[in-house]
Image (cartoon, rainbow, N blue to C red; front, side, top):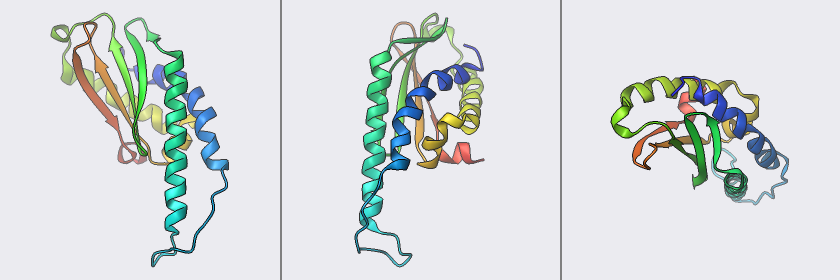
Length: 159
C-alpha cells in the first residue's frame, strides 16, 4: 500500500464532505435560556450536536451511494458509517493482499501520518476539523479479514 494513500482517500471524499458538512455552518439554531456558568446554552449545544450528527449521516449515505470506489489499484473504499456525533468510519479493503502478506505495524506506521497530514491540510476537511470529528479508517484484507483501525482524532490533526 502506498504511503500517500490518505491523500487519494481525502481527495475523493472531500467533495462529499464539502456538500454535506457545509450545511452545518449555515444552519440557524435556536437558543434557549438554560446556560452554565460560562454562558453556554445547553439547548444550543444539543441542537448543534444533532445537526452535526445529521450531516454525518448524510455524508455517510452519499459516500455509500458511490461505493465501492477504487482509491488506487490496491485499495477500495467499501462504505462509511457514523459511529457517533463525533466519529465517522471509513471501511476499506486492501484488494491485493492477504493478512499473512501484510506487516500491520508498517502499514499503520506509514498510513497514519499520511492520513493525519491530509486531514490537517485539506481545506475541504475544514468542517470536520471545526466540529472535532474523529475519522476512523478501518482496513480489511482481500479475503475480508480484519487488519486494523487507524483513528485520526482532533488531537492528531490539531498538532
